[in-house]
Amino acid sequence: MRMKKTSWVMAPFLAAALVASCGEDDPATFVECGNGVKEAGELCDDGNDDDEDGCTTDCTLPTCGDGVVQAGEECDDGNDRDDDGCLTTCARASCGDGHVYAGREDCDDGNQSDKDSCTTECKDARCGDGHKQPGEACDDGNDDDDDECRNDCRLPRCGDGIVQDDEECDDGNDDDTDGCTSRCLESRCGDGIVQGDEECDDGNLLDSDRCTRECKRARCGDGFVQAGEGCDDGNDDNDDECRNDCRLATCGDGIVQAPEECDDGNDDDTDECLRTCVVAECGDGKVLAGVEECDDGDGSNTNACTNACLHARCGDGYRQSPEACDEGEDNGAVGGKCTTLCTIAPRGGENSGGASGSGGAPGEAGAPGLGGSAGSGGDSGGAGGAGGAGGATGDAGAGGASVGEGGAGGAGGASDAGAGGAPEADGGSAGSSGADGQGGAGGASDVEPGKGDTCASPWEVTLDDPAAGNSCDAGADYDIPTQGGENCAVGDPSVSPDVVFAFTPAEDGEYLISATPEQDTFDIVLSIDPTCNATDVLDCKDGPGPGETETLTIELTGGQTYFIRLDGFSPTGGEEDPVPSCGDFVMEITQLN
Image (tube, rainbow, N blue to C red; front, side, top):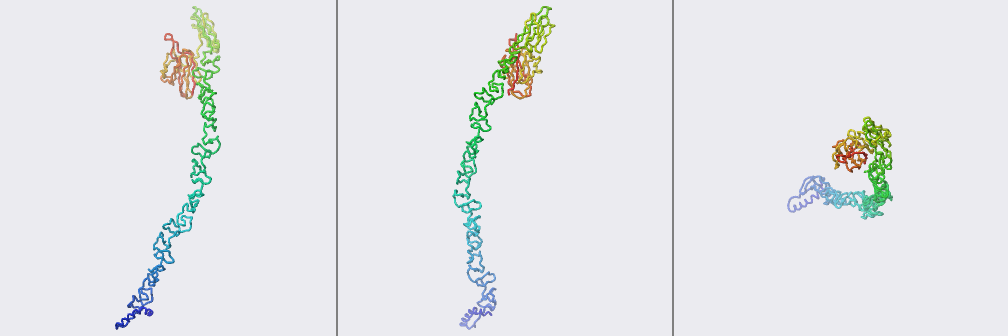
């Protein structure tokens, strides 16, 4: 029996029994807790002393707070405090239960958020707890002030006085002149801040503006080309490609630089240094004052200015228009072909041979007429005159005597039996004097019989090789239509025969064709075509008039053969007694370029 429990249990019952006995005659009722019988006043009675089962030793039902840990309870300290190790809910105190465990927890807000004032570790939120709370930029929970989160829970920045990984310096101020700029960079040339011995600092690496990358003010001679400068080589040499005033060396600046021959600093082309910085010389196309008479720079001696830079003149050795010839110092020489006036010398030299004597009078019947006397040679050794003609019924006249070099033999008399004199190498055979004769006929022409008569047998001519002849012996005549105002349709072969020349230039170029007559009555007409066909005429010239040199200038193709016609324009003297427009001539072709 649990008698020790009796006093606690029986006391109220005894009191009740006493009251009852005093008022009634019922005997007293005794209650014993622990006797295993639930009696009045007991909530239970399991008859044991185990407080941890469903009935306590006080015969009461177990409850949280009764100080006895029953099933389902983690603890039971029998008090109503929640700040100790056992809550009033009979659960053990823990962080997050919403109750601050005195002495162990700073706080306990009963949630799992670290972003409020109480962390999930029941610590008061603070900078450095590793949890970013309101008001904090960061919180890495360590004491390293050089990482990405400062110890005051602020993000690192330039100017916070702490040198971070991407900063060269950080002095915590905004002074850009103290060695550490407000951008946390060490001061240097190019940072845009003028410091120390810097003259300027525009913050770039350009050398073409007013401040160089060396933080020096731009100036001529610093080695950098800035606006307004043509060059800048940074030296004091005024003879190289860049002058000391930072201008490019140019012809005309007065300083001789390679490859200049000279540089007088002016634009005058009549002094010794041309504006092209080349030393003046004959042939440069510029007339050197006081030295040259002219300078056309074309390399030709056949125009108004020779290659010696002298005005063209008769006697300079070069044939210019309207000269028929020019042999220089040999003009007018004995045996020469050019006079001192640059005209073609008469045949046999400037002083021509004497005229031939006329034929003798007809002889009497049966008596042979004697040949006339031969004409004497000229002073300069002209060809001898031909022998006189024989009498009408007489024997042949003998050939005329030759006086000059190269004279032709005298012609035979007009007799049935007369024969002509034979020509010699250096002159004709001597003719005997006729009884009644005066003088023999004139000397023979240079023209070869049949030469240049037709297109089929043209006279082949070459460059700069004059062709001398007599057109009266030619047998061709071609009517050439009017060309550019020039009337080339001229007379018949009896009064104005044509001589046909063939010329093949070696190269493309401009050519001058000139023909000079000896007789004042000879009016030369020149024409040229590639086919010897009147309808294909390229050009035709009939200009100066009788006795004057005719010229024709034309572009020709190398390797192409051209036919040149030399003709007389029209006879003089009228239809009754026409004077043929033909005679001796000299024709020459010159290449102009």
